[in-house]
Amino acid sequence: MIIIHAMDTATLPRVVGPSLSARLRVMPAVIVTGARQTGKSTLVQELTPGQRRFFSLDDLDVLDTARRDPEALVGGDQPVTLDEVQREPALLRAVKRAIDRRRVPGQFLLTGSANLLLMHRVSESLAGRASYLTLWPMTRREQKGLGRCGIWEELLSAEDERWPSLLSAQPDEPEDWRALARRGGFPTPALHLKKGHDRVIWFDGYVRTYLERDLQDLSSIAALPDFRRLMQAVCLRLGQLVNQTELGRDIALPQPTVHRWLNLLETSNLLVRLPAFAVNRTKRLIKSPKLYWADTGLALHIGQNVEPEGAHLENLALHDLLVWRDARLEQSELSYWRTTIGEEVDFVIEAGGRLLPIEVKATSVPRLRDAANLRTFRAEYGKKARPGLLLHTGTKIEWLTPDVLAAPWWRVL
Image 1: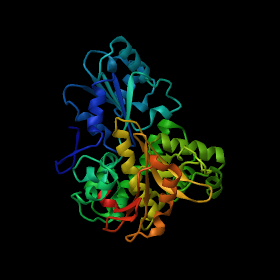
Image 2: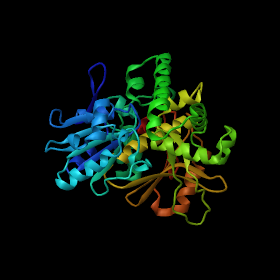
Image 3: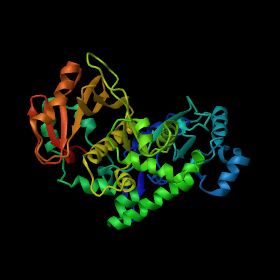
Image 4: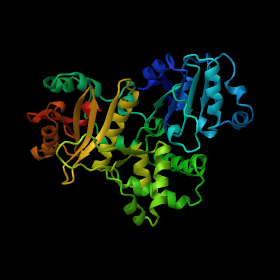
């Protein structure tokens, strides 16, 4: 089992562990990407310790070797782990040559704090030679030491009528979602920093490191104060449709600059653009993506929010769904659904030829009107749609209508 070590020597398994091991048994290279400080380096070093050579491009000597003599890093018969490979994208060409000379499963394990598929400077994607995985910040259940995300797989597998008993059987207690939103999922602030003031110091250092170092690996940006204002504007618009012109007007930046910088945030695995549901029937649907953040604790810090809001609860649910989707071997898609007249469903899971619509409400007492858009979605897509799932902050599990089940968020996430 893949683990990370907490400061108290406890071992905490990660959701992607089994998927990572399965891919290494098949593919010559596996590439694990994710934002800085999600635990990538620790994750890969815990994998078969002593059996793989490990090099981190954060080490300046290793970085220099990668540029001058990459064969010194990728040659030989022993499996190799290359950490933070985005710092020298040209190294991927040497990895490709090594794979083509000797195609062995698990030969290379690469990590990067940027999505290599979105980096303009990366000309070698290792197509057909590599499998990609994303390591997101820790889920609530990973933080509890359970090594898993929410019960999405169980809900998809169970018959509709079994959902209430499945949810009731979850061994969990009510939790304040605002506390979870504040600490986020980066291992250090989530597990080791108990005071809000300590987390502020950590998040401030994270942002400064990102702006002054990691961002410069992706693109040279001189106007860092403007870039930080864009980050803040995005964090204040969680769950809203992307409108680059309006965003630029609010922070006095031209639309092309906003477009380029949003792409950089997405490449850095900080920004999440949730696509619109693509299957159209009779209604006119909105096509623009919605903006979310990889970590609610960081989003709250950058946005300078005093208190978490409903959009942060949505973001927590999306984060858990992303962890589930990206660790899953079977194909699945996440999107949102919205019509031009304002009918909206927060999330839609497409898996196994079925659709599961999900609505998230920051209320402890969901009402019938809260189920309206879920019912509209089901009416639109008929037998392909599962019952609607309405997550709330209360404690009751109940069918609001015959086709919409209301459940506490902490029973699912």
